[in-house]
Length: 148
Ligand code: DQA
Image 1 (cartoon, rainbow, N blue to C red):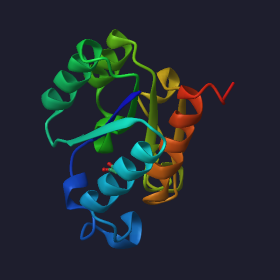
Image 2 (cartoon, rainbow, N blue to C red):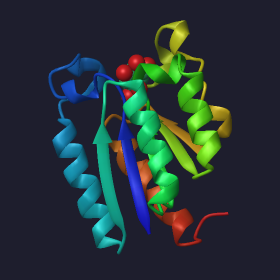
Image 3 (cartoon, rainbow, N blue to C red):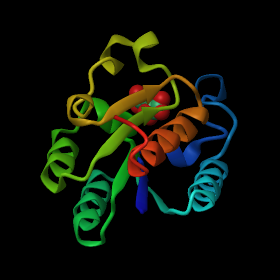
Image 4 (cartoon, rainbow, N blue to C red):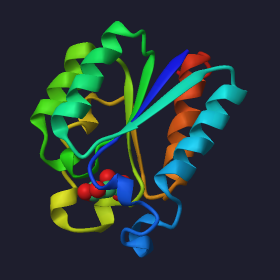
């Protein structure tokens, strides 16, 4: 299957950005780990980071044409602001998991609301770079029909 990983704004700074909150792994480390893991399970994985809402939305639209089976998305701060990203994901109807490095429920109150969670297959947060691994494993389980 074809898996698309989307990273939202500021995630290009991972490794140096508030490491006490987001950890020390870089985005390149995370992407390499995800690609290795997906390939080992016989699947393809492509990752894109953008600081621009329109670029993420356009990549979601493209996912409908290019046969993407599943999306993993860390929308960054767009989680809490973007009705447009929500509408894009709802519009293409490709199943997705929302994930966050930090536990958004243990931080500022404005991080508790997500425009995406209620239309996601599921949400994973609070495990640092492991959130990505857990999200990928959940996606693989679903794609292999191992999950309900
Ligand atoms: C984040 C949490 C968001 O609230 C924040 O704006 C981010 C990163 C996370 O991965 O923990 O940019 O999505």
